[in-house]
Image 1: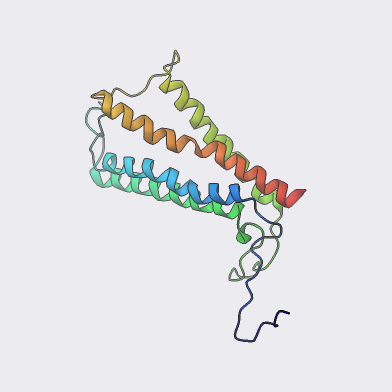
Image 2 (image 1 turned 120 degrees about the vertical axis):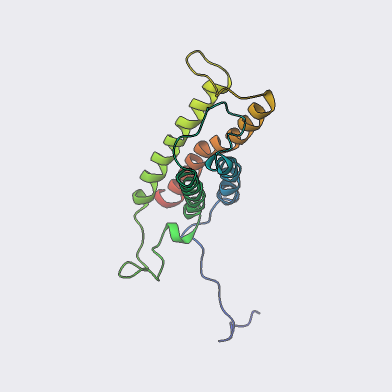
Length: 180
């Protein structure tokens, strides 16, 4: 026979309305790690180091490049972390600390529509990268100084472009859990 919880013991709150499949949780945890290499790849470019690309002189002051690339990298990671909402309670219910809205249920379509649009936008990056890597006529990769820079760029980009299909898979899992 189990004892009733004592007042000093805390009972964990349910994480989501319905159980999240383990694959979805793993993908949501993986997304920020997939975006990190491309964010790190961008940072030297912001400081004017071309990472093997033959671009000529970088336009504008260095601080503008650093600000742009730093902001882009930060937003990329924040969006990757926001995908955790597709497998977390805060993707279903507004957190209680939010004034006026705290504790309210989030309509599923308010999450599904933007996540689908983002996933499809990221799929465009996948198709564009695929066409460039496999040298389909009309698309060309950047002019790199040597093959090693090209391999590094393709590897970093390959990790990043997997984000589109994974966001769509998470969105599908969210839809199945919340709308069925």
